[in-house]
Image 1 (cartoon, rainbow, N blue to C red):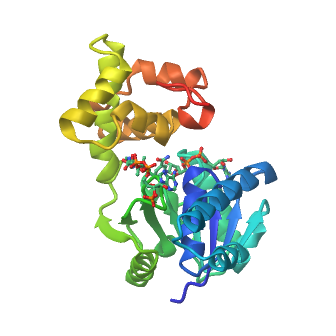
Image 2 (cartoon, rainbow, N blue to C red):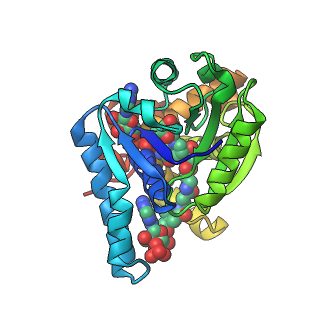
Length: 283
Ligand code: CAA
Ligand code: NAD
């Protein structure tokens, strides 16, 4: 199962990072989003990241140009007809992902693998929106994609071994470490990380400490590179809420109940770094 042409759906922080590492590893990449301004914003982040590598002497200018030449932008899903692998990184919402997978299933060639970068949603349910559940798989990258080594790989109920192997090999070619986990809400990463973030938000909500103090405790006391509220802003508070809702729906346990303060911030449009305001404010 040879993969050469990759299409990435969603040019937000994850999709643009995934497109960048794929192009760096030699794949031809189409980066797709709903509007040209979204794909252009994603591409401008990629250009900046690559330029930083050049400025630091880690990449030749020619190499940067070769990487950029392997990339193109799309607002037409029909471009999926040329892809060997589609990696979906649109919003963390089952309706959006199911609709996208149903459409991709109609457009993409029969052999094409449809992967999702979902943080928490069941792969088996996303696969059920298609007529090719054997070719659907979870490929969960971590943020920021160019830096973080892990990719969780999740099989749906029907995922073929050959599809798993192809995705595992590709992950290694990207310079990442694949870890296989089973299809349960939040997989391993977010089942453990997100309740900690939610608890940090409850700590602020209940007046135990200010956001700065909570973050300082976890950074200096537990050696976390970012405090949980800085990390929540970095991930996106909308994404954090969607993940908590998936855990709460999936397990039914009160310990996964999203903090009301998280809901309030998302309703206010305070989505963290990407919207300029969350627990902190950003330029
Ligand atoms: N894109 C590309 N590169 C980036 C970057 C970005 N957004 N942010 C930082 N970097 C690079 C920098 O260029 C720098 O590279 P060099 O060493 O090559 O110069 C390197 O990362 C370190 O950056 P900084 O020195 O500026 O800052 P730092 O040492 O504080 O590291 C960090 C930044 C790597 C983001 C670090 O703070 C960290 O590891 N934070 C925690 C990240 C984390 O937990 N990610 C997982 C989130 S959960 C998830 O992704 C799953 C989900 O489903 C929600
Ligand atoms: P984001 O908000 O930065 O970007 C999402 C992008 O998807 C936007 O540009 C949006 O226009 C686009 N989009 C929405 N609907 C679309 C559609 N129907 N077709 C094409 N594009 C569409 O979000 P993000 O942080 O990049 O997250 C994307 C996915 O990756 C989510 O499933 C999220 O759970 C997952 N994820 C996020 C993180 C993180 O730390 N933020 C980490 C791992 C996985």
